[in-house]
Image (cartoon, rainbow, N blue to C red; front, side, top):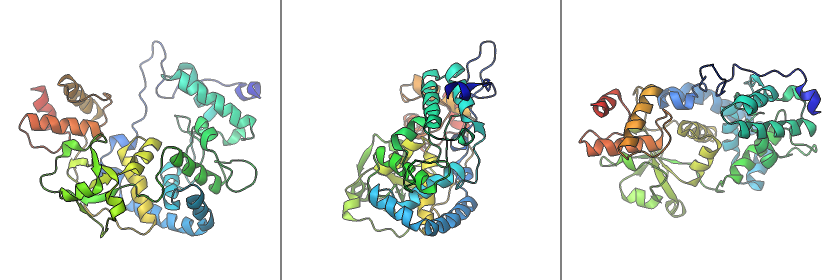
Length: 359
């Protein structure tokens, strides 16, 4: 089987993240989650379309989704939202040959050991019955309706339709149950929400918007954060520990994020990805749009965010990766810099603040 799988296999040198002597490094494609602003990524027209389709699928797969929630503990609207984000409910065809992609990354990629391991698991998938023609992936080797790495398939792949095999390529019950098991395996809390949209008080400190700063939701409410969307927060919910998330600093919506927020984030590290999946799951269940509109703030270029991170690192305010992504830690460090320098504290990276740092 191994010989048949690799016969005639040639490396795909067009892939990003390869290390080839004498050739400039090709960076990974800019994931929209990291290069777009919230208003660009979280488009109302997209939510309308996907929520409408999601409600139709909720009806079509009602019994399957009910079983998933009862047996695994993850609501059906959440796994539907992941399916929507990953492959547009199966409408998006993954573009690459997974075997060629994983072999190339395992041979000459930046993370050889990681991808070599995934390559071995991909071969095992075929040995266990996955057709070669189904082995299509992203450049990172993720497969199937909800984009599973091969190793994750062997942790969480589930035969939910009872046909004797876990099929994440064609069986919607199997793919959705597998995604639910993955979330459960990462710590999903049964019966709890992913996040709460709130209105922040005028004196809110955006620089504390990091996972390390958390307190019971009830304490956030005492400090002036107000639930939006007509939501009443029960005593049990008020006892949940949550962090503050302000994706645009002091502009745009604010959220209190309990454990399940970070479980989805473990599925995909981007805050905008989590907001997309979480909000779409709410929309499928009948909720309205975000109550606070997103601003039209521009996004700094990646190289400028890197410069900002490097300066914040040199000042001892930032201790995470220099990656050009203005995530939670970068925004919090920026807020600390603004406070120390008497600037307006909004935790949003702008050219003006970068110029101040350079001066």
